Image (cartoon, rainbow, N blue to C red; front, side):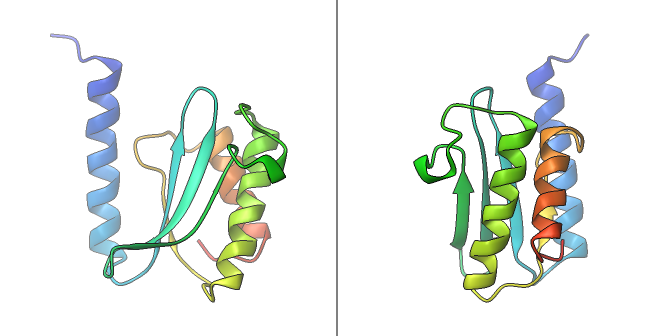
Length: 119
């Protein structure tokens, strides 16, 4: 029986998140979501259950509304690094969810690292 693309994505997401939670307990989580039209990222404190900072291509001030390309992902990564610094956060672990670490997701992570966020 062939697995659907969605089933494989969900299995991969559970595998990634469970491993990250075991290894990085007590640290903040930088969670990425990518859709066909947008990309967004959140800095989450799982212990308290709050989002400390977020950035998305849906924000008009970034200038990439409705675009999901590597340039937009780079801009979102830089924005989340800047907002994390304002929130007093210097390190977090990168939760890619079920998305593969290449292309837009990798560009976002690299831009966040260049912005001073240790992930």
